[in-house]
Image (cartoon, one colour):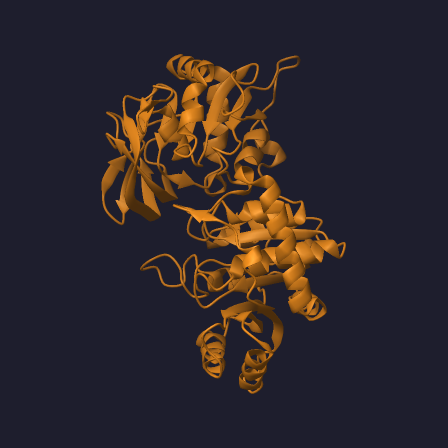
Length: 458
């Protein structure tokens, strides 16, 4: 049964311990055994799920208790895990780290409890020996509702180092399920917002994932890890899988009339997207067509609405600017009143210019790179009516960028941010909704239905 899917949560005491290497390697190693593996990531991260998808051949999905609320974590997990033999969930930051000032909310520990999943703790053992036992004991005893089912020791230096670590952990009651030696060949390159996405380094990413799988298969007890996963039992609370829409919500389409085409930007410059967004658009009656603004000079035929999500347009500003035919067509679409939803990278692309290079010119604003990182969860309310939300709609979002748009808000802002500081942000004009805020539409399915209905009637 789907509600009893075997599952593991891969966590760590802190960021940089090796969660992504271990989680991705486990996914690929289990897949190589012939298992259908469902990949998941705690938090709002878009990049790690790309590596997870490469490892498993299935869509990487996020589980974020802040963006979607705790009640949706299990249903979204079960939706992604349909038909799978085993699920691996990569955590975020340290095991007990969550949204600032919100206790356990959005932490890996909270997600593990909501899923009733055993946790495998990945410990960077490079600078310790006997102290590892105190660290593991502390994490295992901090919250009795969190079950630490085993530990994987990462960055172990030698056979003697491994022996000391195992001796120290013998009395902890937490089994060692893997030992990984230092292996720089599995490292993946990073830049200003984290790992370089799969879409930008496909062949190198394939090699990196293969190296992770080989290292994990060589150093971990896959049989013991699978037994641990299979002992998880049913997901607590009798949760049912999430669905994009019930049959009653599916709009009736007049016979012979084509569904409205919603063009969704993709490719290396716009690789940030939650899978549920396109599922919600399709469930609302849209024909979703993905296109690459770096390669294609025209929008998909019949485009009635446009979604431009997150990514790295600052890295590809020259190529995006050089694609003048597409820039002009997008401007014409937007100025004609068609629905356009743009998040973060999409906001930059709609500006007049980015780092001095011409963009689409839909918004009378300029954008550029800065040294300052803007990062964090946000509580937001729609300031006025737009193609995405009615005035007063409350949503939670996430900001993550090193760019600045001037001005930061238009005459009609997209959102009023309520926390951590009150300000208005983004642009609403005609059918355009453009903002830095990344939101998860599963938390408010009316967003997709409203957008598609505007595509149908505009």
